[in-house]
Length: 95
Image (cartoon, rainbow, N blue to C red):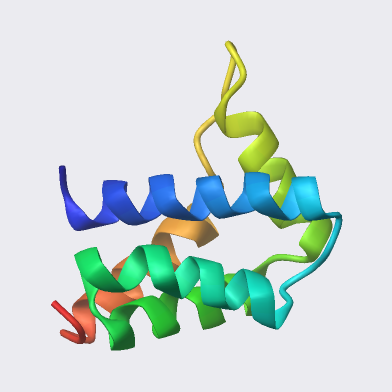
């Protein structure tokens, strides 16, 4: 699986955790994202991506991404999602 797809799946899984917790981009959520992202992607890449997601999406938007990902008629994430991942990937960090 490509780095972009793995990270996309991880980010969507974190969205579900956010929905369950009812919180935002808290330290706990950041820690959870990093704990699951670091082994596969590297610390710098994961930090870059998480920072980009926090800047680009409100908590509600981020939650909707996660909720939508697992529906029968799931739509792909918006272009901004992939731009963040690609930007961090092109920076040649953590991978």
